[in-house]
Image (tube, rainbow, N blue to C red; front, side, top):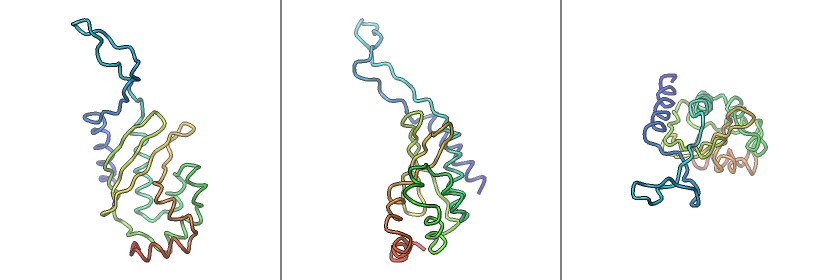
Length: 170
């Protein structure tokens, strides 16, 4: 498991360093340097400065905790906003009563730094593709689950368990 997590982290960092253009376009009115012909060149680009390795360590920890069945530990890594939408007690109760297949690895598919405080994630577990985010809050990275995860708990524990059972997710 550690090797897989390390490989995913390493691969994501290499993808970002080698082929992933995470720098946003400068505004259209940005001053551009002149070209050899004296015409304005392309706009100057400003790189997004993000500690991707540090951020991805949080997602790796989140995914490892979920895979191991440590739902309280995984919930603890969430953003305050997500914690307000789903209590730890509800998250743990639903997952204890109807756990998704444990030991099924999460596979990171795409990592997109949006700005220095936000990284969008796309990940896969089995056939399902999910989206989430990592947010820098108070000098540390926190995991923000996708909207579908948060909505699942909106009608309470019993409804979330019933829905999972109906969809044969546990």
